[in-house]
Image 1 (cartoon, helix red, strand yellow):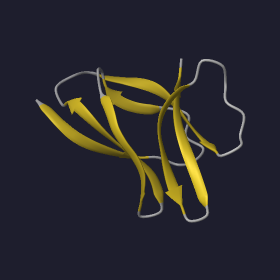
Image 2 (image 1 turned 120 degrees about the vertical axis):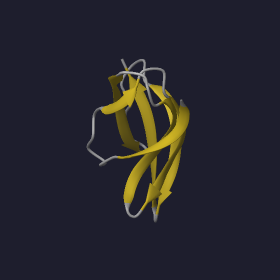
Image 3 (image 1 turned 180 degrees about the vertical axis):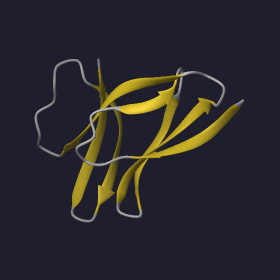
Length: 83
């Protein structure tokens, strides 16, 4: 069954457990935590995806794929997936 789930993260998180085939739809701050909302098949098996949150001006690893950005007061955080 397709649905939207949310996944709170910490700024230092390096992985996110999501159902296989999940499509990330939004990255934003909620209650002080960076949070990902994803469209998922709730019956699919879970897989771990490598997610990294970078601040503006930080170096990015080679091959990182941009997902979304969000504001946190004076900071802007950028979510990337790496493989």
